Image 1 (cartoon, protein in one colour):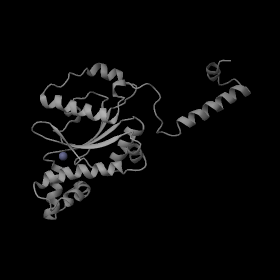
Image 2 (cartoon, helix red, strand yellow):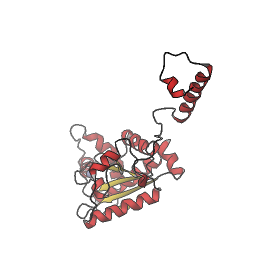
Image 3 (cartoon, protein in one colour):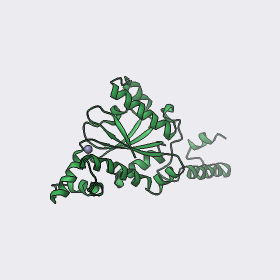
Image 4 (cartoon, protein in one colour):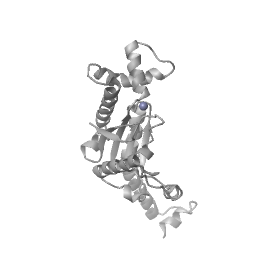
Length: 244
Ligand SMILES: [Zn+2]
């Protein structure tokens, strides 16, 4: 008897054999898909994105070099959309500032389905961004996380001023200040440009926080499944300088 045909006839009384087949199928399903974090078993829509952490980093760096040189590739959005309708397997995850001048897909000359991007002013890691990155690693198999700060970051600058003047910013902005204050305070005694120092420190601290984020990201780093790196985007020429 065809098991699939039998399934299509719910009114039919199940035989012992089909019942056992169903039970085995459910058990097997549970073994592979115990919860909503189940991996997609379909072939990845972008096989070229199934690469190692080091290869992913190299690809980001090469993409940024093309962007800096003004020789970005032309992306076929129409066919990319169609190919990605059934899934995604990005080759890198980016935690970037929300600043309108920083567009990771442009900065790394990448197409749709290539980068899993989380953006928040000040590019810090909170529970929501950590959860998003966990999803990208555990479910989408992204092999690399890049924390991307940038020059002249308004969020970092506002935090420096708020702490210096001991003022409280309006609305929900104090939550950004609270998230960025540790990095600003950590470099308070360093020589040089306060904003540049704090921006770099924030990237370094965020990398450390993500590497220590149990249980998913920390285990993935330990097993060598992913790498977590950082960079600072230079506004004038678009170059991302690696940090860390
Ligand atoms: Zn910014």
